[in-house]
Length: 597
Image (cartoon, rainbow, N blue to C red; front, side, top):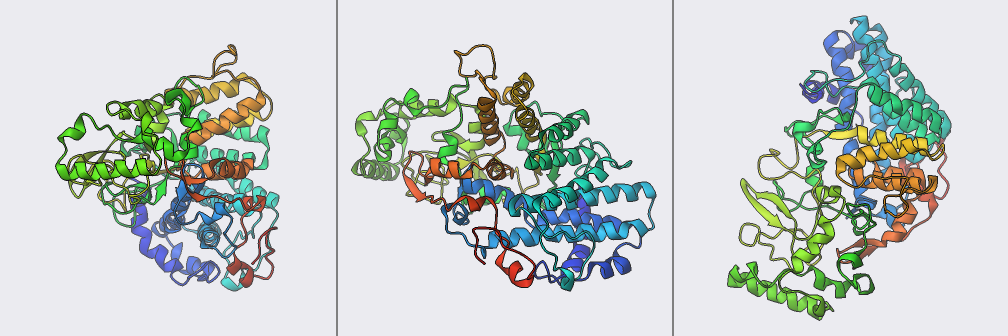
């Protein structure tokens, strides 16, 4: 039984605990609710702790995670792009919502930690629930500290009038996080891990605590201690899933040994994942918008399967020297073969599309009437298999659905937008633009999810591939070693891409130095972990976000036409502003450099 089923039981209680809190500091006094109501018996204690887990969903923490990826490095979002185009201000809801929602979880955790010692429950269970509560408090503080770089610390229940603490230093907050995590790993009754099918699967484990501890040390640049913590995760039984990368994110494998800590979802409105809603397209089951689009810069970063850096000229000679509009010729659909069988009205639409492309400057001399599609497909099919598992690329197929009717769609240009008729072109909202679409986390057909707004598949918050690559990074930052190469190869082997090596300089997989290995580890994380709440925060931690923005130039059509240009505002973006509303409410809060309230 998933933990989310238990959360269903406590929904009303959690709502009662927080009903009087329209924002972070307008809190119903937790100590009064806890001592008089919440902690009087075992059932209520379970409900109280499950309420801390519920914050993962109620606070939309997971939504915020993939939204951030979609804004920058695995894609560009249509709405909060202000973070990366230089127009965002301290009053933006991105900052206030993040602050408010994460402190919601902290206050719930404080309530449990304060009241559990006196609760009338078995001591072993009490110890486990205390460890879970401390992990979750550490998790929420971790997410705050990595972006705001120093926040107020509250370690006991407080009333709204008492929420006036000044910011602690970033190092002090890391200490608070590590203290809670050390209590977790030293708990006698917190299990190392749960196996799939266990009624408690989805709850905190020592493996999750060591993984978060390792992440914390990575942010502190304390690589020796990060290495020690991250090694423990594998020792406790977590391992890479050995099936196809795409299948790792399906419901059948949501409780495999790779998943260390996940948002638990079931296909019930209010308790299912919404990732599929935001990443799907008009022909994903449930319809609605395709809100987030893969970045062209990111797609073009994927290597070829043999480890060779991708170069368009290797597949389409002259491509790099052409203007984006001239390149459109390479993306046009075949006019010989299947097209000949289309209804006349479809043919008329396509002829108009071809004429428009030529009028806009497409170099039609590069076009092949029969074979244009196949030639282009090779540029994607010859790449790291994770690309096709994550992105719907031109002339690749996607099994979509309109209502209960399933169809096999193909991403083509020009498009007919034919949802339920031949030739079943993949429909997007941006009919005048040609974009990549996401495949990862997007439901297929009409039966994988009951509704696009509440998918039953769990959403990974921490998984073992992330740990393996962090461990490789921690080792490499202490000096170039073969073990770091071997760890990255564990992930590459599962993906089906050529392994790195240190013996043959003539091959593209040759690793030459610590610096070269650092670049390879960073790229591996970009390809392995998109849409999982990792990419953006990696770029912040490495201070490389600006480089990616400048290199990508903004959101583009597939062939490179810039639709929304980026304008890097400056390095102060790496540290988020304290929300304006919180500075107005608490005079002790000092704003971060570069931001104006």
